[in-house]
Length: 64
Image 1 (cartoon, rainbow, N blue to C red):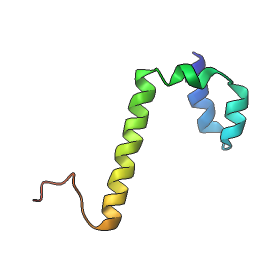
Image 2: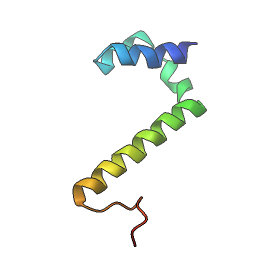
Image 3: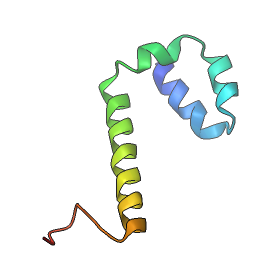
Image 4: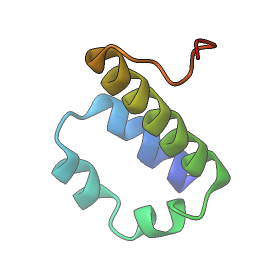
């Protein structure tokens, strides 16, 4: 429940330091969460797609 509250609070507050202060120690346990890992992976893929689009190439397309 604390991890869910941590993530949802992050959507509401804009300053990362505020969230860290409110939930000291929770983020360490959160890193072990499968859901947290999926969120990170999704963000990584999105970042890669944006970078490739800026360069004009898309390694995720079917083009050779």
